[in-house]
Length: 126
Image (cartoon, rainbow, N blue to C red; front, side):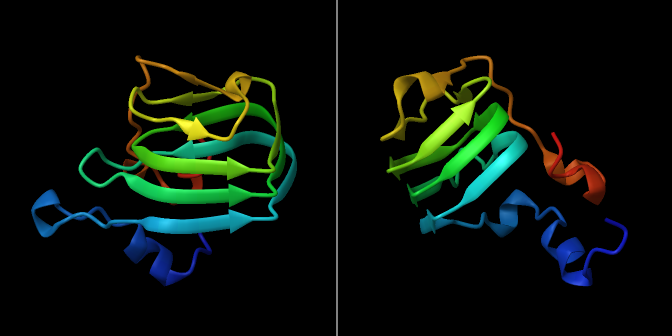
């Protein structure tokens, strides 16, 4: 990751809360296929600006672990195939609509991870 483009470092720089939070909403992800993945989802936002209205369709993911989803609202899955060694852990207020109930579970002990404090090479490998 030492060869990351300069704009990645800008995007990964923490912003003080008083400058506001980025809001991400109305995202569609479709026709994604993954095989031999370690983790399917690693999602941490912030309670003040949850990731809203994500739509997933035609996902075909095989992963050792489901991973986690924190601070997400109104996430819907349609025609998705997830083969996970462990279910996706979700925060107390998160529901993954459209997925089989065995694919995810609420984990009240789920801790928020601040990946911005980690070196660039580790940020996607929690």
